[in-house]
Picture 1 (cartoon, one colour):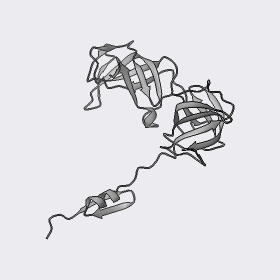
Picture 2 (cartoon, helix red, strand yellow):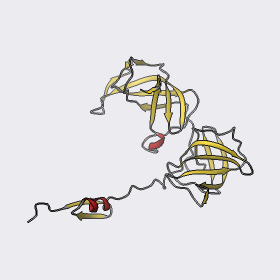
Picture 3 (cartoon, rainbow, N blue to C red):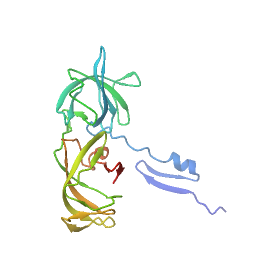
Picture 4 (cartoon, one colour):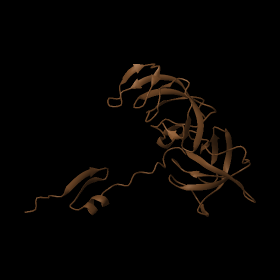
Length: 226
């Protein structure tokens, strides 16, 4: 009588059972692509292509993009129509999350939009530039103390922008998630403060709960992530 009875697990489509690792792998439900969310497409580059015009390029994080759609770029504030969408030199009827696409836009010059801008559907929760935002930060390795006024560089999606810690609002215990100190003067390595940030120019950030890829960032200073 074998001691191993196999495994069973509950998932959205019901109960799955099996005996081997391969069966367990087969029973994994693939993650749902966030196609039902509004479009968020951070630009990696913007090209000017002779005979075609302006072609922004980037990876779709959420939502879909298709020809005929009216899109807005934040924080540039440019709104235009998508003429065509392509991936690997093939025309697409629509691009979905995970696709690296190039798309041709009407009447927009390459000077008006740039890397770090985010493209979204102008009729469905269009992206906007933020003049300031509040974020939870974890200080990994900073040799000294960090206080209000600290101005490192922020890398968020494809944006790379100097950003000032304008206020340190509270310090959070990383184990419990509870606040342990209000308005601390300084923070150091290992601390997890809530900080009010002011980017040197408006940038497009989102709440992590709504759009995770646009709510994550790294803080860089002295050529390393701090």
